[in-house]
Length: 410
Image (cartoon, rainbow, N blue to C red):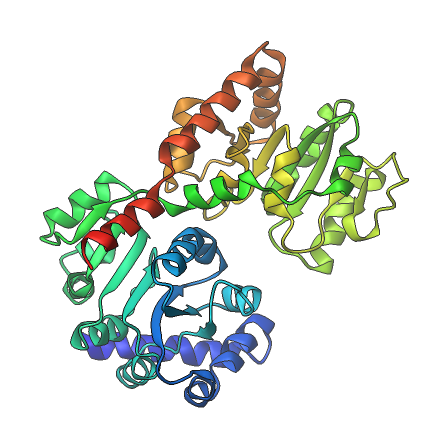
């Protein structure tokens, strides 16, 4: 089976190289790994103790950031080596102050894994959530380097637990310890005779809670909001924007709207402007004296999480596609949250729908009805805020549990 795995990985890498001729992100993926052995060897200093902290992409970094911060405090004598598989992580965090070194993780393979680990020489390795790479995990095991997985979550449908998944099951058995999000994941691993697991919860709760204590102030957004309420729609796709357009016609007398599309490019921004007509303007072109503007379209990357502090209502995109984006950045402020029907894979969305702190809608009519329902019922918004804030408080603390485990198992 190992040969088929290796062929699959090499084919994947070859496809990205071919695609890099026409795609900027793929080109960054290829360029970032060019001559990686010499790049890494040229910057590492001898005599250092190091910890490897790997994230597949930007989202996993945000999820694991509280752990990285805690590791810096707990292991002050170690240098932190931060790695990414995707350009979305590396390009945004290549100058991350929490890390001493930032690299792309080379493509998995017996030679690459051995050479990379021999160059880095980590005392410990941490992987956030997923990114299970056979040869890396095997090399960690062979070299007796502890490797931990943070905020992992497992489901019976995953390949590890299928009759044909023996090869992948071996990866899990070589991992030193799993810090999983929920009891179901622990029980599934136990059932498959993988006992090295602790339920710590999801470190994203720690991340959003920490961020909410000192949110970045955006005076221009306060000015845009003025004396109206604010509806923030984050990480939206075309299907989301279609139903938001209809909603805006109903609420624009009381609410202003900010739309942050998932993809920031000229074509996308212009399509959004056409949807909302003269009421909309790009953030980069907004004249703060233009008080008639009702819809602000964010055309940059990095503002979204800070925007939610000003939201009276929020909509999170992706629920009409493969699945919703991060709802916790809005929920941490207590904000009532709406999203499309594809949310079941996301524990926090499923639980908050149950507790009536968040709401799933199937179409424009349902969105209108839900918004009208919760805004017109006296005291409903306050009740939702209480539910959402309590939910965050009840689920934070994963980072502390992870560090406590490391203290007890040096």
